[in-house]
Length: 325
Ligand code: PBG
Image 1 (cartoon, rainbow, N blue to C red):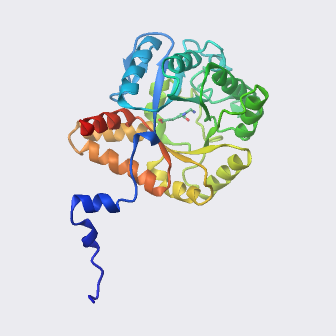
Image 2: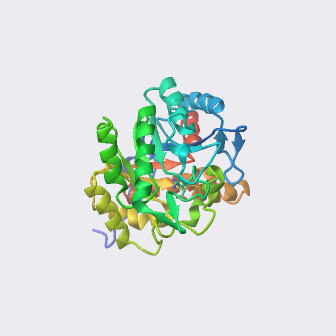
């Protein structure tokens, strides 16, 4: 017997490496975030090359391509024509997201439509709830959030993903959905949501930068790990079906720890800033985008994620199609 272990035995050939690979990236696990606009033209988001704000007509065409590529789930964000203090556009039955959901479900009934349930894209102050004296009021914001979730479910959303980070949002939405007859609609809660600078490009995409202050009174401090488990535990207790951790790259320790706390599905949100950094480096020729993306996403699976919300989903689906050919 030799005195040391030959780890390289299992790395000798491609097939050998394939055989012992522990984690895999498959299309079933990917959720593709998309933006729909009520007014204006379809436009590429300057800080997120390859990602667009779609008019409903172009969104409809884009769905054909996604379906062709085998994308099974999308996450929808709406940018309304008019914003006001209470985010009326978020829970209007003919709001932009409600219309987009109807189009998607009408065209591709099997495609899973996840509705991001928040108010920040719809409020003129850009905060995720009702503001009074510069403070986002918790319980008042919950009422509007529940109305938003119910109107999204009525439009046909398959999954409700509340992201405004108010206390009790899962409890309130579960109750609201059940009372409206939507007992079968699951809640994919943004259980652990940090007040992160990695959301920068998203705020351009969704036009949702806060007009004053920041989101630190409702989103978490990136310095805290134990607090994330408390947030997770309360969403488990309130009856969420699946749990999002966001952002991902800098928070994989949290993902790993969450994996130990729940057997329910965990989702990593590979957020806008994570996308933009990779795209920027790749456009400069500094990194190999395909490999970096694979490494980044597989690390989320390795940490314990079941699914990944990622703006790279379409690129990945295209590459997989090419391999098939
Ligand atoms: C809505 C919401 C945000 C993101 C997802 N839902 C923005 C925020 O909280 O400021 C960010 C997603 C991304 O950066 O890709 N509250």
